[in-house]
Length: 309
Length: 133
Image (cartoon, rainbow over all chains, first blue to last red; front, side):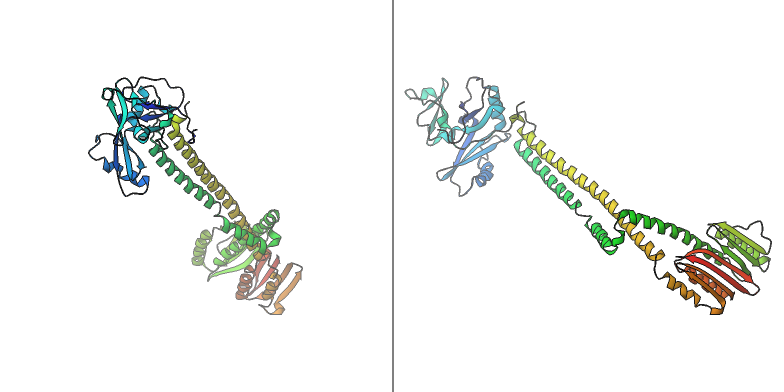
């Protein structure tokens, strides 16, 4: 019975294997030809801690130009470190007819060391066996009378490596996760900003509520607009009237006498009497700067100013 | 299409979609806030303008305030006729300074000046005012 829920067939992969045609997803178990193994009794508790120090353990053992990944698991009191080149393995598997998308999990023969109680045949010339707890590949001629174990799903260990999406993927899993995390962080910030925008008009809302409460008669927008329109007109007209009266008053100085002023809702008229020519000259200047002009009814000493409101 | 082959791209695409949705949400909230603020700010401004205009031109104490003008000159110089919210006043025998004071005072009261007449008669002035509020 399979308690792991994994029902993929397990394929033993070795360098001299024949090309195979795969239609269904498979799991693969790699022979030591594809990885380098090292056992160390390290005082670390968790696999992630062990994985961090894995590269330093293989210093000088691996090709410096290779791009290695590491698989770590505990075996009794030791940690087993496996270094492998995922890209090279995927390339090999594809060449042998196992396309990357068909691969469920990758296992290493070293993980099945306890199952390899007798050699397992690898084609006509080689065999997989274990020597002192390490799985190795040896020539079959070194085992003339051996009984070979058939390789089947019972060799499947509990843990395995889930392969990258495939050689055709533009991004590695690590890159994809980093990018996704960055994007999700941005999304969170933008979402928070969006939430904040929704709350920024609280002050205006409060001010409006305060006004409604203080002036209940103005709660209706229609009434408000109507009242505002009425008083706005009055305000404009009355301010204009006061401005004109102010300007007329500004024209009066020593030698100028206002003899008549008449203002109705439509127009205004002011009559000034000037004492001499000097005063008349200055009055003309003031008149111009105030924006008024004399009417034809004016004479040298009597100035009539008219205008419309 | 084999989905598994593009798992990494799918992870990034999903995150990107999520980020774009969040960005869209942010922009939509910002636009909504700007529109809502604009409407509310306008409403507050109109409200405040209405209130202040009403306070100035609809002041219920305007009638009383006008009474103060009457007392600026001796009663013999004044003809005062107030009907409801309308006033017709005639001041006669005024000195120029009195005219100045009366006009200045009147213009500082928020009444609607219907007519304002000033006429010089010899050395004195007559002032006629018609206003409402």
